[in-house]
Length: 157
Image 1 (cartoon, rainbow, N blue to C red):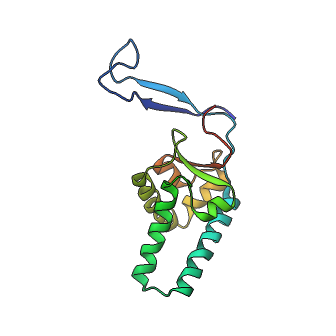
Image 2 (image 1 turned 30 degrees about the vertical axis):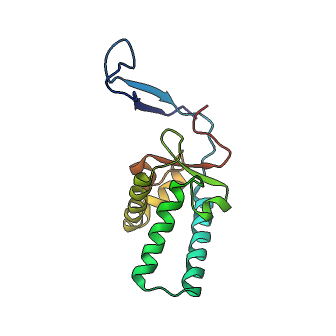
Image 3 (image 1 turned 90 degrees about the vertical axis):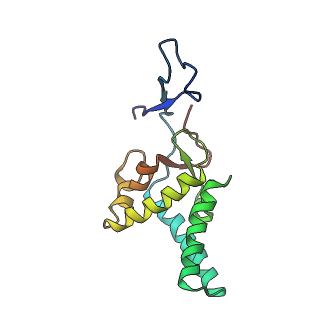
């Protein structure tokens, strides 16, 4: 598989990142062999998460609003922690990283949550993309520049 090219701005736009000038973009190549988590493992992770949230709702019946709030917190907070994913993602050995191979921020996690809603609204095509994409990315991953990798895999060499 060919390497994927990403661009990254220098950390300080006031200092030149190269002799040619200020604010130049540095080219970064992804590791050509990261292990992406495919459609079926991601589906299994989601089913585990759904089972957990259903069990919580069964034991502690919430109003619809509270259940939606719990879902939002579960799918937003956990991926932004050092766990880098939900309990389901941990169970299948997956982690969510940003385009730089780092843990995603809370803002990116919020964006990813709402982008997942969008992926589901268009006849689940955003999720089906995972099965056919070389990097196993869904629409929500493309929108938020995230990757789902094996826990022991790195995005960069």
